[in-house]
Image 1 (cartoon, one colour):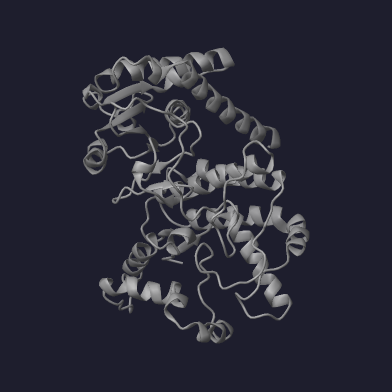
Image 2 (cartoon, rainbow, N blue to C red):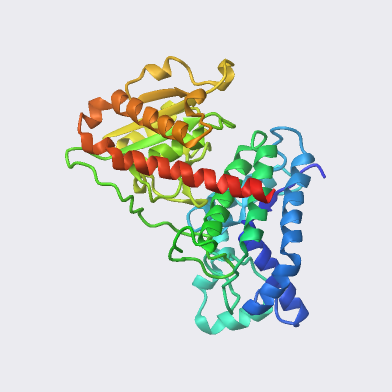
Length: 412
């Protein structure tokens, strides 16, 4: 195979959708017409889910192993983006551009692609209700579960903690193996990993379930849209809107520590937000696009700080960058010149390493002290901004992160 277009989906949604397909065939039902009962799902899940998780990892490995590094003949798409109202048309254009490079393929004009995408993916919004049932029985269609699934029946597809940990291990293994080879795959899998981690915390009772917005075949934790986050942190009224971007090179292990410290101070109850290193710099939470002004802290592996500043600065009074560097190789570090800017704080990875709770607390206090000192021109000397409560929130996030990591290690 010289060229391939690869589509992957969150395993929490992909595995139940596959099971529904089996259920329809077994019961002689039209394809994409009906979901299996929950008890049938649980019985099948307990027999085959672990094997399906393993096959999911092998699928990704197969397509990554058969193409050279940075090979553009194997673009990767996420099912969630392809069926999303905002990203879907853009992804369809990217797909058209790839197919246009194939011999003998003459694509339609790019300006017509969004219309075709909507006619195929969102077609049921455009036809009279009286015709929908008839069309459902006569045509097989793309089944965008987050928006317009044609299947009827129960959407609950619960997993056991052990099955979710298996998914975490599989996704983490794929990230370690392939994230340096394909940035888009890395960002998609990171979004999936975040969803599965959250599902595990819900199932084990460590966090309260959030209101689900999913329908169709989607998992209860596949979030199609994210509302404005309640950060739980109040700031003095004289401080205008701001945003903090934690930037690091890929594989910088200290970056997630730094992200959780900053989020503990500024939005301790929020989920991690990512700025992806694509030309359009999309901002995503749970793998779905959100406006950047709905969050305070985001993280990225994009090294073009100036490009991000130019895009996001008009939305805020100030955008701050907290950068982690590691090693001595200039190719893997942000420039020293960049660190001289007043809205940039540079830290070394060694400053974020700890081996016990006392060192963890010291790391958090050191980061908060340096942040406060470096950006005092904006935040001033208000003690309420960086009091003991916010330091405690930062440490609590680090402790929660360590607990999840230990569970994964224990499982392995």
